[in-house]
Image 1: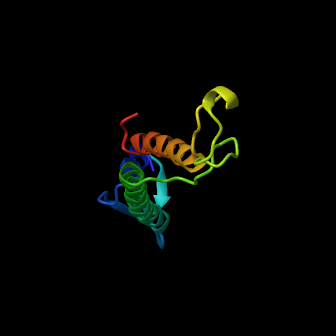
Image 2: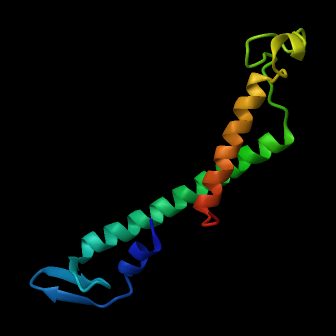
Length: 120
């Protein structure tokens, strides 16, 4: 949720009673039912908690990638890494498929974390 929505639904504002309905004026001057207002605020808090858990899990994955070797034992071309043909014969340097996939995923994860933290 963006900060504008959080600010718009500040539950500390005074309410107004119209008949049996309790209304709250948001920062845009719109009157909304308090129960709808409260439900949105609760949903924002729920999503903020889920986002914090997701960020923690993504940071954990980056920590695993940084400190552990992730290999398949098979080159991206399909050859076994231990008996891979020479680079001059295969026209490429051997690259473990598992390490390649993990590296690309780590790059994507770091970009996502930077976006979530407002760094990018």
